[in-house]
Image (cartoon, rainbow, N blue to C red):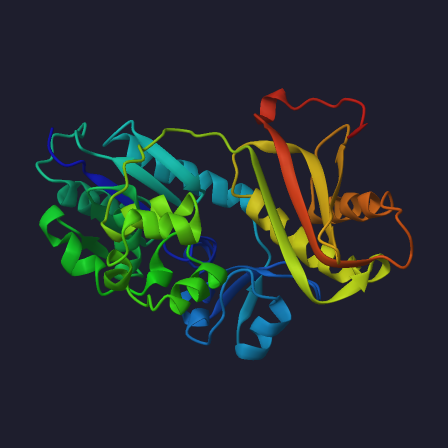
Length: 355
């Protein structure tokens, strides 16, 4: 069997691009998609706004400071979902092996494609042209022998670009990259790798599997494979979301009474992330970590799922009221999650359930 042909398609600044498409007055201007409010976070930013350093999940007040001329637009996830569905229909013309990651990106396995196009590169080019012609939106795409490399490739010529990594080009592309470009290498892992003298993927490849397992446990196996451009994971159509969550650590441990601002910010961030899902979450979870690193959780499955950011915030704050382990207790981390996802038509009103 020959090499697989995987495409990663990423809609560029999706929510902002839809707003610019639908309102000619917003075109070529810095557009920030965010709700009103001092505690709001950025859902999306046009590339004109990004040039000022604005990015998604940033506090909206900071985005406004960075880009005073920005035009703020309230998100319309019903419209974004409809556009995402149209993009998905274009994908389906070429393959049934589609793994959506969110409303604005997906993996496609086109090792065999429906249209008989001779190369994956041509499939990707055709998909981008169809999205541009039919939906008047930009999309970037990466083509590679596996999902890991295809996602890296789609970022390479953003926005509105196409980049291909052929099997024989993997080492030339991969080895010079900073290790921070590898999935799962965040700040903590990056610092740990830095202490080992690892700055690039080439440096990482100098470590054998036992060494990486010694330093990173089971994730060492993944690092060993990624450093060699190996990723055997399949494109899995319609993989259902089990849960989504966001959390943050305070600069200094705080009493429960001072957690509200963080809960409100996280609720907005979580609500924005949940709007990317086609299914509805029924259970809200509040997570707290004490200064002694003890983890506490409280959850609620309301009679009907939250229908707004305000409702989600209210539930999270009500869950906080159920934490009672002393006024002197301090907390280092707070998080909010959504779980128990169901198809929209299966979500029916039922009695609230505390868990």
